[in-house]
Length: 423
Image (cartoon, one colour):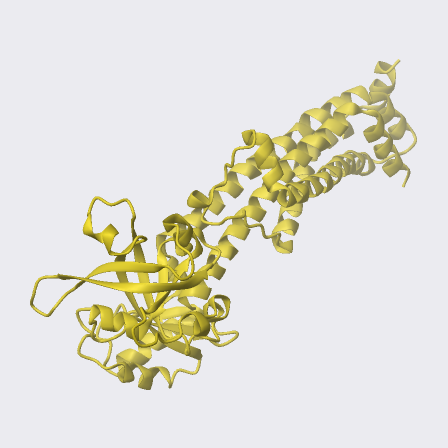
């Protein structure tokens, strides 16, 4: 206990030791904030993707499934235990004009915007996260006689086109007759509201319509391009997609060894892989900052050993064993690292809660984290206890390692020479 008090006295009266703790704190804070942001980004991307696109999706190739009825798929999917629900969708690209047909008459018009028209069944999707958030049954109720079909625009798309509920849109697309050339088709839709998934690109380039309205517009047969699957609680989407592929293969619907089903992470594709790679790179780079901050303990504690030769000699004369002297300097290094890690966690937590304020300080008031680049209006943050414990453990282990050399140097010092040189 007396050696611990001595270590605390050293820390309180030596500015250099406090600066070492501050250097560790800055490194830990930066790494803590970077981990929280990248984890938040990954979790938020997963959430928005799964709420919109489901846990998995059956995507039959257009060249092979045109001769089959939807009932063929339902007969198979009903037998897969891990499926909680499934809904057919028809995805179709089109051009939307905000001023009705006049915008489409001039191909040079700046009022056109490309959108993915997502045809769905509001009644079947009313209980899904997307159905609840967008209130599909109310906004996509069947149109009355003489009325244009309803459409829901993403908030960003509506804002960019300058549209409000009640406005009429003109949609231009193409019909591909069998064995013939593409024929342009157009139809008016009535905007009934907006929806927001939280992900910028999904709110910018998607519009929701009734599937039967989209089928009537595009004359698409069969009337679906994918079947969105939602898994039961505890069922892994990857395992579910593999099970569905096996069932489709056994039923003779799928003939490709690659399968027709994709899990949500496969639908995320290269972008999700890029996020994982970026996370690894950021953790490596910022951990080197912590490593450099911890490395300064070698110089700091070595200088402390040189300056405190008399104290070391006195400890040895009073009967302190080499193990006690080593434990004292290792303990001093751990004390510095514990204080530094604690301050770093507090500073990192503050940074995570005040990212917009820090952004304004850095940029002079101009936004750096724009939704067009980072996909979300707000910077997502997720503080994970496991990652925090791993960060603290790595910091303390590194500090312990770098404290061993100064401690070894102190124990090699001869007691008589230490007392004599200190006069």
